[in-house]
Length: 124
Image (tube, rainbow, N blue to C red):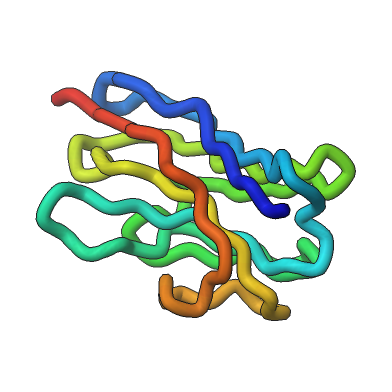
């Protein structure tokens, strides 16, 4: 049974870095596209990074491109999100998600499994 568990969130000053991790404690990441989303209070869930099923391509929106980097380790069933040059606008609850697709979609409704999230707070 799929169970996604995120970790690595916390409080960091603007300009700092965090590395988020997501583990599928219930099985494997193989065969799934993976992504990170975030949701700030009062805002819609936002796609921040995705990686395709093979791990060969990653996708980022302009808001995080050049600052965030996604990687996956299928052997460890772990997905990572390295976040650099953080700003207060990056403050949100960050979620890991899995989809039975080849390419990581930007729409949250296309994902089949979700973690409970890890909070990232960036102070100014």
